[in-house]
Amino acid sequence: MPGRCLKWVTMLLPALAMAEPLATPETSPLLSVSGEISVTNTGNEAHFDRGMLESLPRQSLSTSTVVTDGVNHFEGFLMRDLLEYLGTNGDTVVALALNDYRIEIPRDDFYAYDVLVADTMDGKRLTPRDKGPLWIVYPRDDHAELQDIRYDYRWVWQLHHLEIQ
Ligand SMILES: Nc1nc2c(c(=O)[nH]1)N[C@H]1C(S)=C(S)[C@@H](COP(=O)(O)O)O[C@H]1N2
Ligand SMILES: [Mo]
Image 1 (tube, rainbow, N blue to C red):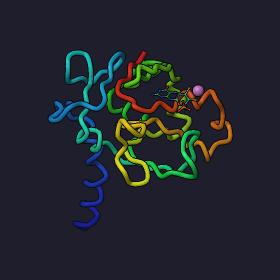
Image 2 (cartoon, rainbow, N blue to C red):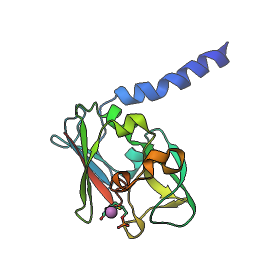
Image 3 (cartoon, rainbow, N blue to C red):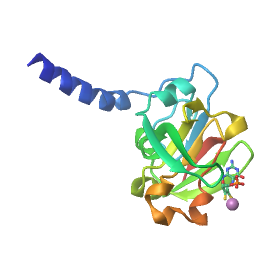
Image 4 (cartoon, helix red, strand yellow):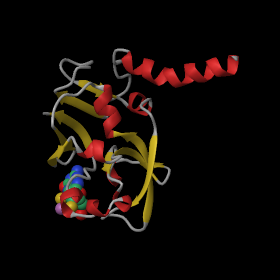
């Protein structure tokens, strides 16, 4: 019986954590989110440091990419989980990168596919030198339709800001 209770508590914990107000970053923020969100911690935006991002449910994905050789193993969190966490309300996610690259991504992508916001590749933390701190990674090898230039544009590396529209 105690084992059963523990199981339920463990299952419910992530849901409870999500209902909590968003903490404030303790180290420099890696990602900020603005626009149609209902959870904020810095003015109208939600700012996340590494610890906060690492507390989102972890997810991994192995895929080839158009800019690396072979198959790489990525870890991070699902973009969908972040959108849900922030209570987003909008059809479009605008992704901005450190090199000022900007692209609009339909929100539906993140519900149709398990799109990762990766912070590690092959067990190594992504840095701004190698596509970090965050890289939007599609499960390219699992879906033929994702092997298309339309999606290649959406693999934003050096991601640092999202605007929900
Ligand atoms: N941060 C950032 N991400 C980006 C880009 C960019 O210029 N900056 N280019 C996009 C485009 S147009 C493509 S096709 C893929 C691969 O770009 P690359 O071949 O120039 O590396 O990354 C996408 N992600
Ligand atoms: Mo491109």
